[in-house]
Length: 250
Image (cartoon, rainbow, N blue to C red; front, side, top):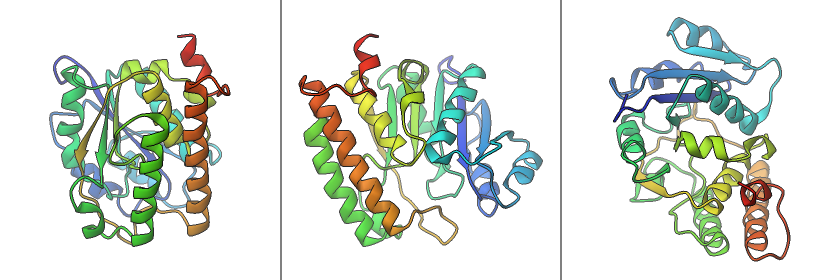
């Protein structure tokens, strides 16, 4: 508990056996009440290792994709009574040591959502982020800030924390099951008027860290621009977005 609020850490996992234990053991004691892992039909022994570590584990019968995995993560966390949910990749790219900094602003009612930013400071390139990904990140973030009327350092981090209210209000099931889920969710959060904070997060790009191919990165980038443009058009009454319409009625 933190300020009387239950904190649940969720880990969307796929073939994470090589880094799971290292990630789990680095979680700060006393800040997380429950840890759960959702396995997206891994081909390695992620599930067996998670169970040996005592982690609550849920297994998809079929691979649902990164976005589909997160949908299960958040639904299960809310079932556990979470007031704050932290999403952390089990590939050790993001340090678990920042969990206190991620959850405290939400527990104190300062922000509704927190992002661990690789771009604040100089941690991204020092941590091994490929230069093309860094440039694409900066370009996409600039366009997104202009289109959705926000001022974030990046929209593409996989280290996030949310209040229960955010997760209960957003129509997450309408979002994609693919990687673009992350950006759809942030567009919904901004459109709904929730407050977002950021903390500097050093990252480690190692061979075990999860990554997507160059072609999938290009597909993701196009999806990001479409999502942001859809938010812009919806906000200005030019074209309705099915991802945002439910928020108009809330």
